[in-house]
Image (cartoon, rainbow, N blue to C red; front, side):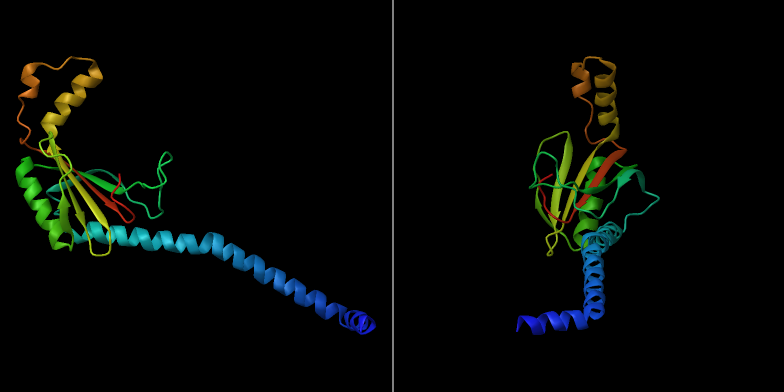
Length: 189
């Protein structure tokens, strides 16, 4: 039996080497596809979905002026907490008071198919509302008064102490700073 096997291998040596080479090439190509192509496709699909969510809000570009944005498809996990991930975001300025801006955005977000489920910091100097879709996608909307934010930011960074009158600044006065975050994985940011 062993003689027959040796004879078979000796007779078919070229075919066996060629077949092994083809199998090795197919294996390498499959590994490359699994390691590089599939994640790239998945990240593109996720990014397209995030862009679709932002677009579904139908925010008037003349009213909501983008000041900063970071929209990406890959899941970016926090370095210090693997259970949480970064959100894609867009920052806007809206030339309206905070209460008007919140009302507009809440309507736009619910019209896009998201359901309000919490306000984590009631009574803060800003309003943050969380929304969730039926597909477990999350939107975090934060609106604050730009003059109020600028006052505190500028004084803090210039090392100027805040006065009693600084705290009395109307937190509803416009224009409004708006941050809209979209997360496909969690609401733990």
